Image (tube, rainbow, N blue to C red; front, side, top):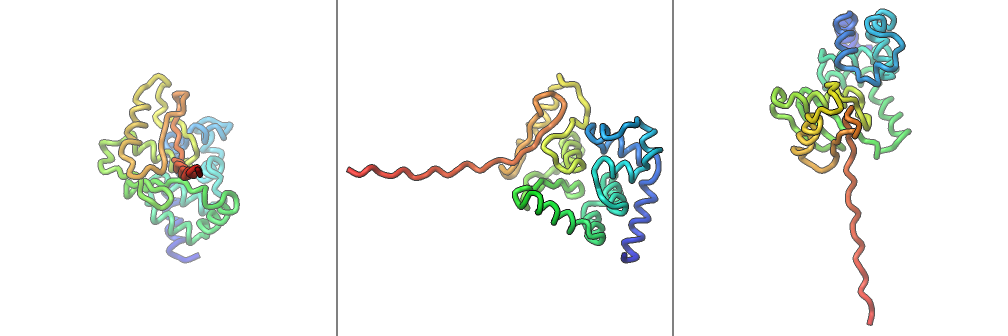
Length: 214
């Protein structure tokens, strides 16, 4: 392993392997589905598994070093490009790409939220830009939650609002109304507990009707 990569991993580990970082991960980065994977409540879950073990159980990241990178990125200690370069150095991106292609093929593309650039991309195209994140905090929080969870079809409401809270619908409308390309869309889950995303299917071209011969 290159010394620069080793130093980056050691620095990241020092920043995440403590109770404060673990509590932030548990409270604000993990979804309710992640937390349900543990039998213990907080803080016993951290004492038993430590920060790296928590991530491994919640997200299934395979190796110790890859977990360090993913936790550091989730907590904001390294940015998106740095995460990609470290995973590349560890060989993680190649393995993940090959495994994903083997399982699902090219049609399984998922969105990517770049928190540093404040851009949402899907299938290589820019579909949403958040120009004023402080004024669109709800939108940013929801996109961060989808990104942290790996873009499953549904996530829990990161704000844990009551099912009767109508601001959830407002958030969805705000997410959709400034989409640059009609490649994906967002919705409430119908139960008042979370959000959905899905790709927008292209309408099928109508076949030209044949003229009837006389």
